[in-house]
Image 1 (cartoon, helix red, strand yellow):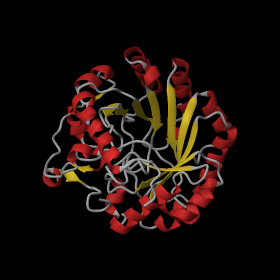
Image 2 (cartoon, rainbow, N blue to C red):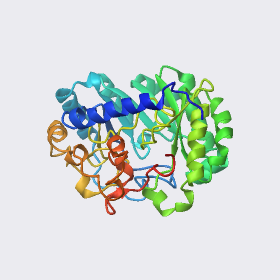
Image 3 (spheres, rainbow, N blue to C red):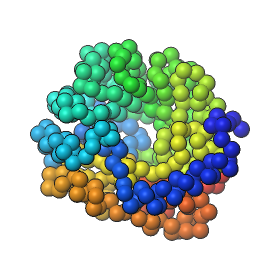
Length: 364
């Protein structure tokens, strides 16, 4: 098996043990906000078959105003050391907000470092230049396959060319620390991995983030898109083999404990669910939550920026993410629980009280 980390399993186990110790005894007791996600809008000009937050399927109710977001940014700057904090701007499609540049120019003026996730269809040379001037440092653009599949998956005819054009505008405009492509791999596009690598390499991005489709959101209703056991193995074998093959680094996303053999072979660090310990999010309506990919349930909302002080919420709430309650059901007697702690919160089934996706029995 391709080993690109240079680490033995013994060393990896030692590292994972140290990380488990840190999670239990330090991080959960003294969480550090590193990434603050702001969901600019739930509106989207695409209708992706896998969308975890079902964007475009409902009307926005009571979205935050320009001034409310600016006031919130003022509060965050006052209450946190923003030199240690990154704003992650997302949606829906964030560029659909008419006041997008007004807000992000204000964030830049306040001194925030920020990045964005986008579908790329609204980006051209002029928009790329405006993003650079507004201080955007990083951007991840969704490109979910070759032309025919991408447009089927995103239910958006003509979007492939617009997305590629948008990515090229970002690359050619220059001045960004990192331009990345993110691709969701399903049962229907896994056969195109090598062809996608060849095609995407030509665009000039620094990295290609490859993630498996998750059994959440709309994808839950389409089980035929979920990967088989053999396809999961194929995906991780591909990432290991192609990770440092060319100028475009291939890596896996932050989700899921992958077992001692694959950990560190497909991404820079070991699995740790950051929800509520490193990561918090504000939804388009002001609700405060952990990771925006987590199922939207009332009991997971920690507060709302319209009525609550965000620093107080961060310091005193988020208990569900900082206590150990998931050692139950399938996880109860698992020898890997110390390393994964119930795995990613976004794929946890809060009704069945078990993970919707666990790689034990698939990868290890």
